[in-house]
Image (cartoon, rainbow, N blue to C red):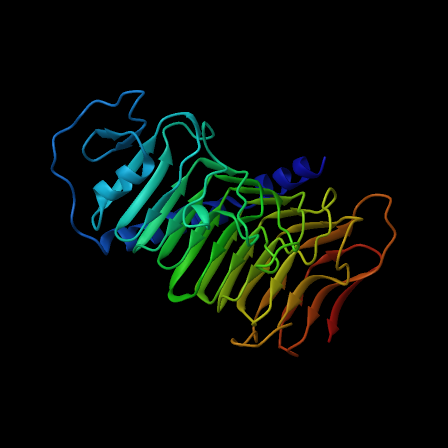
Length: 338
């Protein structure tokens, strides 16, 4: 029922906004691809089942994802991945690479991590992920992720991150942006290991984080979205904590952020490590102003049958936040200065 309600909200989104989201994605990837002007000119080679990773620009197939990444090197290229479940991982040190399932939803990377970090460790100029599932990532320090982003731009669309310690973990890169759309984050997060808490999405001091038309559900610890980005756009997503276990905030902006949190749907579950707020602002060391942050048109409630009390926005900064048109359930205080 919760998922259906979330989809209904997406369908009711004005066409102009949906088109704007699509154009944002196209434009963002155009920027990073234009930054690398070198292409391929090698002859085409037919793909075979023993070479499921094919570079679209050459038609040449490779047995491993890492071999395909290394073949692109500092250039730009698209790796088309044949349907299947792969216990493989890869490290991208340079270039701009699109990683795409040849048919969305048919490609899964499971359980295997590189450098004790993630299935994809990204530190090139940019990367884009399309239609891929990441599942079962776990490492000794508790930060096993589908994607570890160490620098560069990142776009993600139509992908799934599930049943891992962390979905996406990003370092600091104030000159770059992260754009996530129409993706699902399920069964993620933990605070039980030496690496501190892991979250569904955990972003360091990036220039901008955008999350649109995506679903967060069934968290297993930590926060659903934690970001130290200077700017966030979190729009038209569903945060369904009804089956969560030991979770904290839906959105945590611990360093302060500007931007907008709009038209999202939130439900807080019964099993919370911290039930005191849905959104937290400036709870740690403040790095950015949050003046002008817009929080508008959201719907927030408790799971059916739960009578509780909480705060929709807990603010440690005393920021000049623009809050309006939020539909809050009984027992929810709209704003609290902490």
